[in-house]
Length: 222
Image: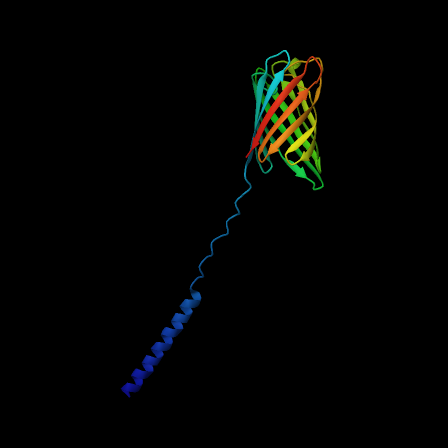
């Protein structure tokens, strides 16, 4: 009799332990999977530096450096000797680009000018490319905060033909305050050489006149 009771108790104990283990397993919370992290913005920054050396007939030459930084839609730019001698400017803009066969880009900007000339300047850089032909325009209007008579419009329209992967040429014009000539708008031509991320371009403005100027431009992007 005692043996039967012991066996019965052992069976009941085993059944109770098994039921408790199953219940505890069902109630055990599932481990939380880690929250997915947002994908990092892997689009890199793009930088460029351009130095233009101006050789002006009958006047002292000068250098005009420009630095740019682009990240997705953001465009940043710094210039010196562009709006005026011994004058710097800082810019911020928004990059727009669309099209495949006809590729159009537009960067409206706002800049602050300081130095010999002080002011605020809205500006725009635009280009239209079809195959090996590119039409581009860089322009701005400087509102001189010192004197309204110092307000001025700057522009650099250009037509570029990319004849070869390493050779380009075309026509160019500029309207600038930095140096005076007999022509309000200076016109000319250019020839450019490209190798990987380096460019060297020679511009000739007002060829054959008594106010001929040559611009030697060296640029690098990275």
